[in-house]
Length: 339
Image 1 (cartoon, rainbow, N blue to C red):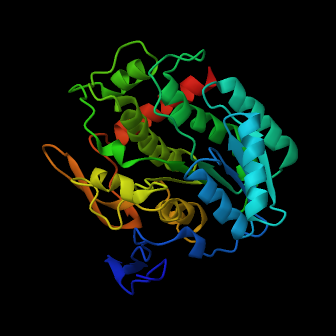
Image 2 (cartoon, rainbow, N blue to C red):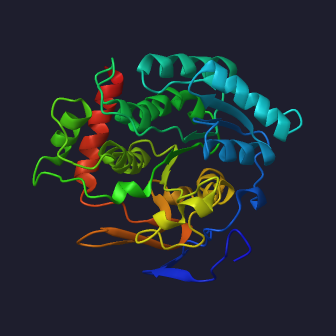
């Protein structure tokens, strides 16, 4: 449909009480520029704010009245991003700062800079990501893991005082459908294995050149779900934004056999809709911890998973982890960022 959110008039009956079913969805073709929320007075932090997704999320937040702290990998890129935003918006309420997530020291510097200027942060959207090369950083974690999950967890933790001062704080971790990729887990002690791979103590078992990316996005969704339990005062989501390119026609053959939603690929303004929805939609706090995504079916052989239907809907977390592994992984990440 034409409208961003379709209200479904169904009720989910649980025992004697009735709770409304999830009433929202976004078609793959819905455009973020048509989405409207009242964000006046809110302060947003968006990492990777100059990228294909981050720029659209930053723009949507500004368009809907928020003040945005927009980060880019270095000062020159941040400055260029602010100049571009100033071309798109008359006097945008935005501050562009440098944040290279590959080291914890950079994250601490940025968090201190944000805290000095802002008593309150309402929304943190962790967009920045890398494919990475699998080298160990000075903080003792694999570069892809540092940028895609460990440093975002650190930033979230450091901004907790500012977020706790907000009336309804929210953190969004941007994932990927690659979180559903097979990761060749050992039969037991999977979190121990995950920690050994993340710290470079042992090589991961995969052969795919995208393994680190898939693994980082899998562990990110698990972390977000556990964060929602551990810090109930802050709503936490992960979201898989879809597949979008500046020139979709050129990449159409990359959609099948896995990505069956239409259009595929999306334009960036379509691909950003579910991320902006997840960050801005009021009234969904009771679903904290969810992964927001298209409908995903798991297969026992290649291509292992297939996506279709609409997004902006809570979906099942990627297997095989349970609450027990999520809890252990959360503790392991907290240990890494506190060292």
